[in-house]
Length: 237
Image 1 (cartoon, rainbow, N blue to C red):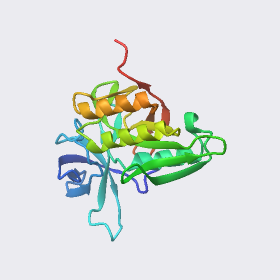
Image 2: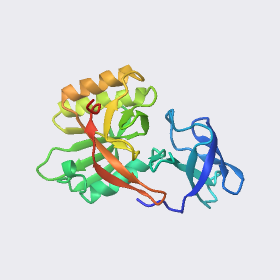
Image 3: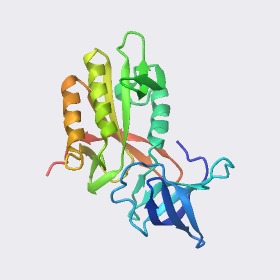
Image 4: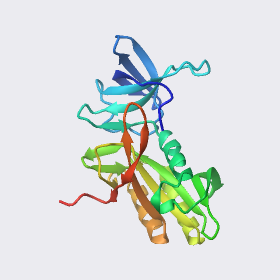
């Protein structure tokens, strides 16, 4: 997936009210960008951090920039827009590029299920059980190369685990897909110290038959594409 417009570099002044970020452009102008990330952005929102913004000229949008990437200035990037993983994954699913799900020929986004919820993707194919796929954007890394989820308490995430478990018990295929929007991680684990309730819900869902997949991404200021699978669990010592 390519960004719609060319990204521009900036420095973060502060991120606040979850969805706002004040930044300084290279020409010295201070602007406010939309930050499409409801999480804590732990480790990604320090003042002075180099970021990449996507400008827009949409008259319907009050903010003319969107915060898309954090540049760690060591050759690695993190995507902080939590809406992008579904766009990237939808294209990959429709092109049958995700090996474990490549047999499915029909992709439906945002399908109602559970209790007032929508699953990110419902996959169908003749002769196969329906596959309910819930996508989680992973951006937390406290100790490379380990990515972790969640970066803050997520009651919604625990609810999704319970609903996926019910789907699996009903005989369908239930998949939790962690899409890691970082280029410096090779494995993924649950941040149980941040949200023990979510960790317990994930364990219960796994026992019920919910599959967990972890996939990395290639990230540049041009765009984001899927990379290969990542391991689940801590790296070997």
